[in-house]
Length: 289
Image: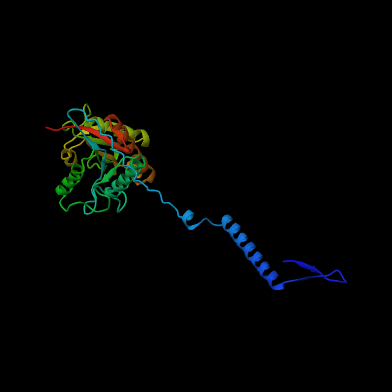
C-alpha cells in the first residue's frame, strides 16, 4: 500500500481504499485477539485449574479405654449414691403436733432433693428411691423392701435414708436433736464399717447446722438390714419438740442439713477409696463369698 502525492496543495489520498480498509480490519481483529488473550491470562483459571480437590478425611480413631487394675479379691463398680426420702404418699410419716398439715414426708423429700443437688454439682451420681410425692408400694413392708431393692439392683456404693423423728410419752417436748442409725453388716469396703459411715455424716450435719448430735445408734431397721452396701438412716430432728419443729419448717435448716449429709457422703467416698478413671468415679468392693 502506497501514498501518492497530488499536485498543487500538499494533500494525500489513498491509492487503494479497499485494500486499506481490509488491512485495517485485519489489524483491529488481531489487536482484539491480543486483548482477549491478555484478559484471559489475568482472569479466572481454566476449568481444569478451578476443580477443587476434596481431601480424603479419615475417621478419628476412638481411643482405647485404659483398663483399671483391680486388686485380688476386689471388684470395681461405678460410684452411685442412693438417697431415700422417708415415707410418702399414703404414709406421711410423723405429723406436727403444733400446726395442721405439716408432715415428715414433705421434709424428707425436700432435704433429699437438696442433697442430690449438692452431690451432682460435685460430680457424684445419685439415684432417688422416691423422686416424687408418692410411696413405692401400698404395703409398708413391701415399700421398705422396694427401697432397698432399688439400691441393690443399681449396685449402690452408699445408701442414705432421711427421716424426721418424734417422741411420744412423758417429757416428749424436751427431747430434741439429731441421730444417725446404722447396722454393721458384712464388710463391703476393707476396714470400713457402717458405724463409721454414720459417725462421719452425723458430725458433718452437726458442724453445718449446729444442732445437738445425740450420737449413732445400732438398730435393725428394714432399709439398713436389706441393703447390700453401707447404709445409714438420718433422723434429722424431732417434730415433737418446738425448737426442732421450727428448724424443720425452716428452708435454711433443711438446706444446711442437706449440705451436712452431702459433705459426709463425700468424705465417706474419700475414706473408702473412691477414685476417678477417665472422668468417672469408681470404688473397689470386696468380692462376696
